[in-house]
Length: 153
Image (cartoon, rainbow, N blue to C red; front, side, top):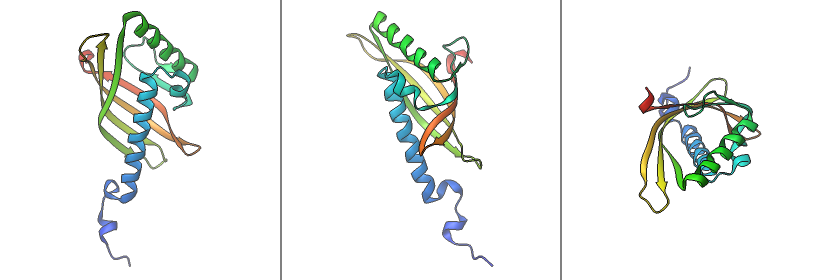
């Protein structure tokens, strides 16, 4: 017979291991978004699986695979160079849901700030980002991302 203890009475989100997982996922996203905003295309694409799906409303079709992800970043870099505007992505309200198969489902709010050269930053977009993350060789990778925008609902 097992006697319930404080540790066994806790939900999965209250276990100490969940705190470590949550911190890992937050660090993963901080790194990933900074790569994206810095136009480090290959490094950013490397935070996705080889067969990743990237489905965002600013593109006509979901992007599949790292080569397509690199092309997206290069396109963004060219647009920024042309317009003189910078975009910065901030994630918050991160919900992390471990799955029995070892994947992790996340859902977060994403605010996109736009700053014109010499101008004031403004909130450009308010989005919801939902990911499926997998561990590959000890590192988290995005296998599937869907982004929705509040203004397009």
